[in-house]
Image 1: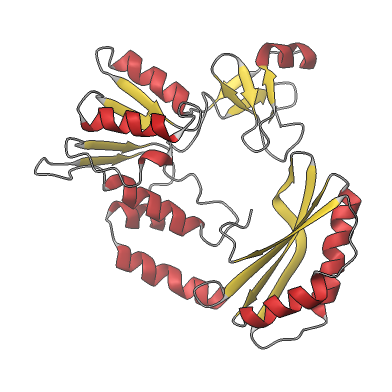
Image 2 (image 1 turned 90 degrees about the horizontal axis):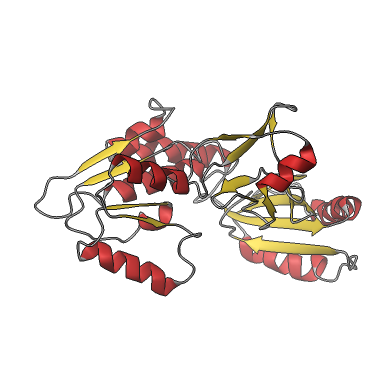
Length: 303
């Protein structure tokens, strides 16, 4: 399950909405010990204090890894259950310790986020379960389908890695989604053949290289003015036969840690030429000290 915490959503009955982080464009997540935490900026608030300040009782919605661990302990009281996520593992040595205990047969059930999906070769693991498998499919990133397919096929590969028969159970509210179907059948060729025409039509990698320019500032106006300034400079080099310019637009996570974020995405087959343009045209720009401009070549995400 790729959701940290106990309940990923805290619902406010009076507003019929989820309680947002005061600093970010995202919701607070409830963790055990009564805390509401933002997974983007780290903002932490006591739930009781939050309810007193808002004058209402909240409802916890959804399931995170902490709640899953609790349910497993209730369902299998004699089982040795361990959880692996960013909250339970603070350093690499603890991660290695838990994985070693699993390999030595000292853990019956291991639950956690995607960190347990990759590179684990435990011959005695015969059953793997994936909960809420469709999470991530709706992200505004061209790699969203690829990431979900990759994660599901990787975690499925943890079961039956020896002579013992393995079984994989996938839970999702979109069982008929093509990506879920292809991952379930481990059909790599079909996934490639379905994904590559879309990438080609939209001029995304591997048919282009990407550059993402992000302006962020605690001053919303300065962030917008900066990205518009950069866009105006880049627009001088268009139209172009081998480059497409998208934006400027607000980032999907528009505000993180009280910083307002706007971005431009550039798709090109002439990345070397654009490196020189950024060096000569963008780097010398006189920008406000209140703004940070990030130029990311071949960005790993677009949110």
